[in-house]
Length: 385
Ligand SMILES: Nc1ncnc2c1ncn2[C@@H]1O[C@H](COP(=O)(O)OP(=O)(O)OP(=O)(O)O)[C@@H](O)[C@H]1O
Ligand SMILES: [Mg+2]
Image (tube, rainbow, N blue to C red; front, side):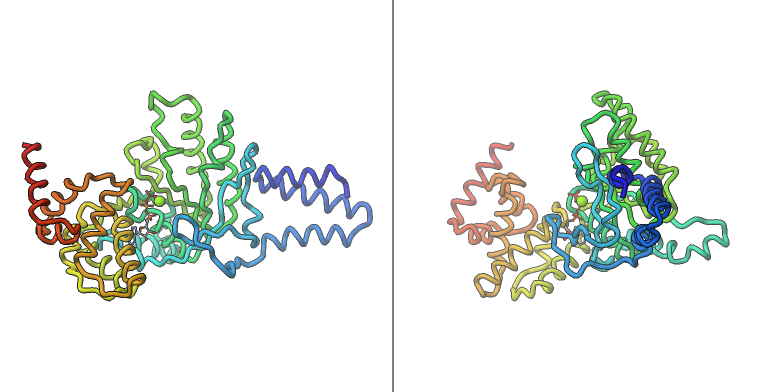
């Protein structure tokens, strides 16, 4: 086999250019055939066609990634497609098969209805076509951290029965001039013949306003490339983008999406549902006042509430005793004063008192004399007046 032809194939694969890859494979097969090696030629072509036609296989085992989602990179047929950044050689995306269901995501009823409509649009695309209507295939998810954007994207892929190309920003964003736009094009073109969900998480990193004074020309080029790729995107791709900085997005981006869903902090009904659901799921024996927990978690993201309930569940499992409100208050104060949330203990206690917990219950959970805590709260109050 000619080394140049093999080098051509490798180069085409690394650049993510599927057309070039096919041409290079065909050139190698033709060369072998010309030399009379018909069997080798057929073998090369069959390897390529086999790759394209191989059924999508789910991996046997998933490993939970740091995000908590099943995000295994595959060694199956699709993984061969993931193009790489030319310089870092990092894959531009991982192919994952999410297992979250839409029922796992707790949402306000109107948002759930909208997501169900998006799923039915895809299922009923023939009916829609009779009315000259295209099904939605571009969805933007916005909202603060920890409110379910990534989870919702995964659930949509699962419900659509599609694999997901989860774009890796560390690979995509290149420090080399012009390379990020090239990477973007590689992502879109390598997926164009697939039924797949393309997920651009942390989307603001590549879609910031072009008039941002702090940004150099490179970002403008990236946004322009993004818009072009969106406009020429294959209808087989279902694109989902997620951001918690929607105010930073370039105005031209918005109209490229069929639907925008703004996921925000859970309301009281959602919080109560989530708390009950997780206490059940982790099989916690408790005497907790769930309504009270619903009230005091008002300013928390869904992820923070989950973290809190998980810490209660772990206390139950490790101590083997029934969990009560003292445990809940203690662990919640612990969460609110930890490094990430950074609250000072007395101001956190004052906040929880304002949310309806008695100073007595708070002092008991903190194992502090009631009078001492009441005095500290008064001092805080006086200093604020
Ligand atoms: N609406 C929800 N319903 C059920 N669980 C949720 C919901 N939102 C968040 N969670 C829980 O919180 C975790 C983190 O949520 P997720 O990663 O989807 O947040 P995000 O909005 O993508 O945050 P970020 O902006 O930080 O990426 C999820 O794995 C899930 O366990
Ligand atoms: Mg996320």
